[in-house]
Length: 127
Image (cartoon, rainbow, N blue to C red; front, side, top):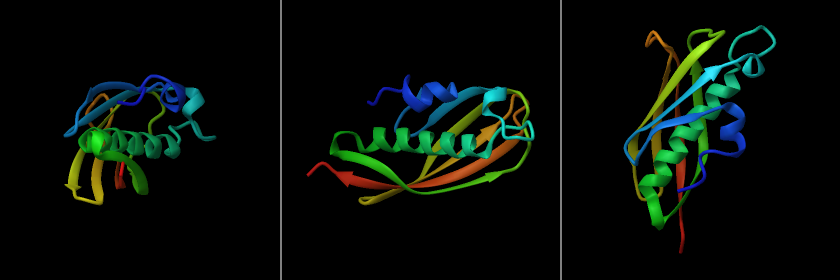
């Protein structure tokens, strides 16, 4: 399993509450350094969390058979958030020989959907 505590994950302040081949749960606190110029959570953060959740889950599923890379990320922003805790839950939609599709829903502390996305992963064989 890759290091889930450093690099970009640390920069965003992501905490993995659950990580398995079937479900990935990530939480983080919205803070000013993650805002866009109008004082709300930057959409790129949502895209990054969606990609991270899908990639971690997809990697755990593929395990020692290879690695995964994201080939498509489509994320919708549904509700503006200025502060508070957000939670992302990623689950697989399809897991095939060459590709996987994961969906991720991001909710606020009141369990309101604030963003959702899907990521298509390419399975890269170790062979």
